[in-house]
Length: 276
Image 1 (cartoon, rainbow, N blue to C red):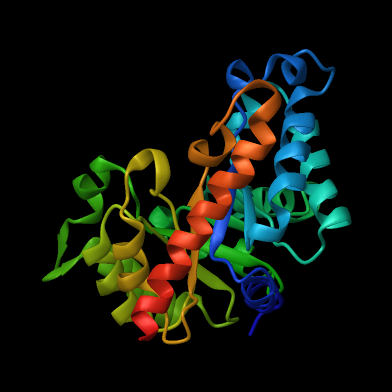
Image 2 (image 1 turned 90 degrees about the vertical axis):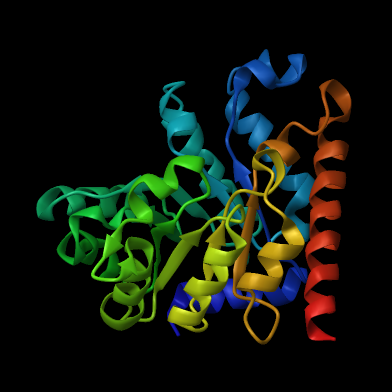
């Protein structure tokens, strides 16, 4: 078991939660008193983190939401704050990187050294050699796009490859070739529970990052039933807008906490139903 998978397993147990909060800042939606501050992205994130830390198994900042505001420094501060204040909670940098050799090396350094992320999302389209610069960081998680949550996923991911769907091929490669260090995970969307079950059958207990609940409308119970492992874990179920913007103005942290708690309870009810 890699250091990241071990940290994730301990976080699942500590929090009794499969919830991941996506830290996707949109300054236009911030409460006025936060938006007016000198570092509004960091201050908003800090407030959300402090309100939800005992309810989550991970946080997932999405890189584009920081780069668009030229707020990469606030991304660094956010990750450093989580590591310092809540060291048991892993941080996933959602940047979906994927490029050839030396460029992939730079992206891996960016994710793991500059930002200090515990895991990063990557695109496997360029093949195994483009993933190796990330995978060789054996203590870090490498989360590979497999069957994404968006409607257009079927345009490429469902293509027939010698009698198999392309996302099946990605899952098989991840399980049989790319996971030699035990640090691979897969992105499989909650909006496609049948595909979740298919991928689970291919890869065994490999953890999944599961976007698509909340604003995207994925069915929580179906995702849990289709994707959880025998011990009731195996999933990092991510919600961003549904938690971050559950409330407005002075009540935004209380509303975010309530939304995160409700999602945890909904997931755990489905885990318990499967266990029975």
